[in-house]
Length: 536
Image 1 (cartoon, helix red, strand yellow):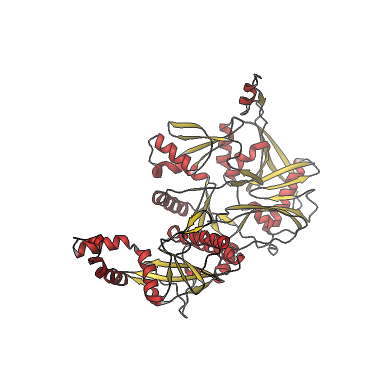
Image 2: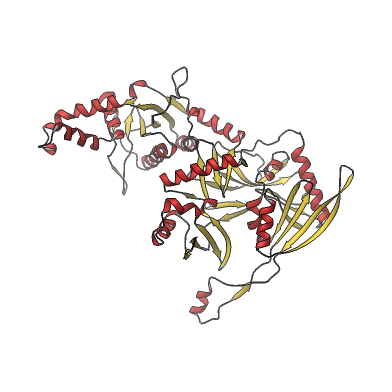
């Protein structure tokens, strides 16, 4: 029996150019096959890297410690079988050639097939949870046959037992389809491709609603997304690398027994042990480069056993979400959230209780009135001795930044207990337990107009909740609230006056709220979102 790793190729010319640059040998062959009682021909070409190369082991250093000669070993050969069948092009990879082919594939192909087939046993699932601390997750199962997915998650791999008789073992689905066949012939591979094509194009009902991401191919839209990505990186220097990638159907873990080389134009740094923002910042400083301007174009070469496994620009190995366009950047390609994904997320967000009370809206006049209310005591305070009213007023505005002022007003006027800028010793840690507290509810407050700003309230809420559950302070809680003060934002209130969280045009924030809701409920507590507005 032979193992087949099948891709459908989107960018044929780019793949052929890459193969040509590697100087792989090509051997063509025409193969006849039956399709709808007609004899047709497809063109097959096998490209191979038959030239032997030697590499030194990266653990030769330990041999040297014992005066043993270093060891070199032959590298494994690779091959790509390219099949042109009608208007479609497919590739079958052997060895590590999937690392080359994967970036040129149709990334929807495998799951288009999976959505329309029957399977009765699930062995492995892997999914991505955008904007979650748990970015990608792999699950394995025993005697499991329910394809279940939570809101905010999208499949990136399945390993299942197919009910058809075409495949002799488990079927794996990722960016490719991997299967085992008993009859190791080109004819059989082409027969299976024909079966997959018919399954995908058939009008039979979708059997599994699988939330996933569809690749964006519209050049104008991609150009817009690229400009927005560059603007975001310049504003916020943080970028996110994933520890896990699914390439084809293979789980590839970053930072695993390897090292990296960073390159930008003629500047180069080798033997970098980890791939993270700190390492990139250090490279930019050492090479006197402007981080925000060059970071996406820095080339990262990954080495394993002293062999260059893969080279990529940073923009091709980060995860990024564009809130406005409802798109994500993954492995250098832009994807649109499909309807199944958005439906799951919409239903989950709709479950969160949302509260609006117009008394709590935060306007410039409310802020100024608060500052003026502090003036009387400030004039007699030694802290401001000798200062004019204007100087005292400016000093108070500096001290009482908007969120601290808001929390103080909630305490003075509405009976909340303020913990903002307070720290409590929980075990050995000093933690700000919450911003506000009232009626057995702990609040994390954030004023902002973007996901990047507002998500800080979610991080604070979860940190405080974990410490609370560990150390049980005096203030008892049965609810956990995120209080979002939307700055310069149009109302998301419904006709009944309650907020509709699904009207927020902030996909990253909604993904994070979804994860927050689940964690709060797992702790046996009620999640609540308060919405108010900051106006001039």
